[in-house]
Image 1 (cartoon, rainbow, N blue to C red):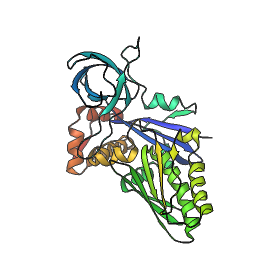
Image 2 (image 1 turned 135 degrees about the vertical axis):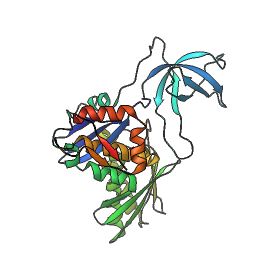
Image 3 (image 1 turned 45 degrees about the vertical axis):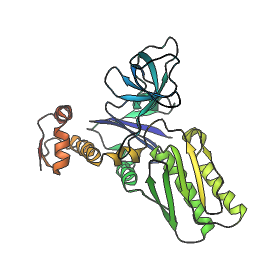
Image 4 (image 1 turned 90 degrees about the horizontal axis):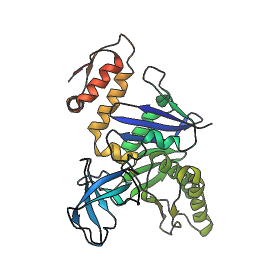
Amino acid sequence: MAEWLYEAGIGEARAALVADGRIIKARIELAGSLRVGTVAEARLIEQLPGRQGRVALLDGSGDALLGAVPAGLSVGRPLLVTLVREAIPEHGRAKLARAVVAADGALPALGPDLRERIAESGMPVRRCHAHEADALEAAGWSEVLEEAVDGEIAFPGGVLRMSPTPAMTLFDVDGSGALDSLAVAAATAVGQAVIRHGLGGSIGVDFPSVQGKAARQAVAAAIDAALPPALAGPFERTALNGFGFLQIVRPRPRASLPELLRIDPVGAAARAVLRQIERSPPGGARAHRLPAAVRARIESQPDWAAELSRGVGGTVILED
């Protein structure tokens, strides 16, 4: 039976839906991030074309794009908004969070966090602790993170190369053997990767050029089978065209795992190191040698060091 494994880590919360000993979904939520469903007081700070606007949340947690500015609302005026998309990290400039005007009668409140969201799935949730056996790692947590960062995903007969871009996430298929069989196997692997890494928005897949309507339909059917609504939620896709390209479109309420890890590799490495140190056996080494950038990131967050010291029951020394 599938269950969620959940960790409240230092700097991030982690969760993985595990079935038959392997990770079906992997999710990370950074501490302090804006959350979908948050109702917050804001102020309109800029009018944009097409009745859009930019608002600043009054608690100082960030800005958001407002989908439709109410008629008559001028710059500088306050309003209550509901976040419908979290900020999406991108190299150069991040996509701002998106908001809509809050419903009548709504009150300021935080949206559900990762722990609350996975509980809403109806599947059992097991809270994992640092002093216990590492259930996440036993299910392949490090391998999933490596997939997200490197983009290489092996499947029987071939490999996918996953490349997030500002426009869409692209998958390239490489492998050997009969092209029809390779494409169907790749389609299954793509669907599983989409769910595992929480990919949303536009997703393009460059398959081998299979010949004939029946072969192309088999690839599309494999995509559909690998994206069951109970796990994947709603999505749309195109047919596989004669050039071997198929596009999937899914809701994108928050950043995918590859986007989170790739935009700040030093931060991701720092949080991973803290997770390892938390699991040091009692009486183990208190001094840990780290790359200078990772050490600097940890030391720039005093609450991380304090939480780590509480967790291990003593002072931890970080060295270059």
